[in-house]
Length: 282
Image (cartoon, rainbow, N blue to C red):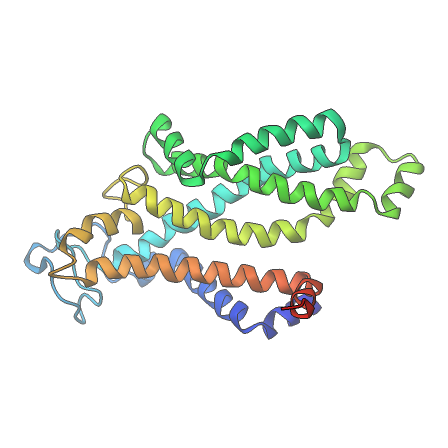
């Protein structure tokens, strides 16, 4: 409750939380909110300006841009959350095991992670997509693979400090097995930084998915995606700019909202960090 109250006092976090809630509602209620089917083509209304019938106008095929933006939010949210969860399912165990056992295991795991991190995120995701082929499922797998190193490093750093606490030493002295120590004592204390990082990772995944779809390596037409729609509509940006602006604006606002929410969540979960930053010499 105290954490939630600190979060509500963080204005940018509240704004980000509102954006996240709105986007989640858009994705969940796209069937209800969308005025038209995302693939319905009104050939007599091609490249039409925004109107009451088509609030965001229509694209070059006569499809309602607003409906495609609403349905496109489903792809972005699905890819962002599922890829982050899959990456966490791999990265969290790697980080905890490396920190707890140390020695050769830690050295081998971290060297592998260092090699992994050496590749730029987008380039690595692009290589994976070239190997697997363009599809929504493969985008999720590619983004999960590239997010593992960051999550593993954060969890390892937290676990290294947690395992030195007195209650961990006491539990070990009382005969607690490694499995119990890892699952019942160390893992719960690593959740807070994972939640913060996970929120930021969702934003990154949404942005990378949009880039891949823009390049034709992500979601494939006619499935609505902000990235692929931006790619198709950008050719007409000089004559009918709104059909390219709307998907781009959806990407910008969504990513901004998740980043602001993640930043506020970090301050709420660890207020000492904000105090240290404010008291640091300038």
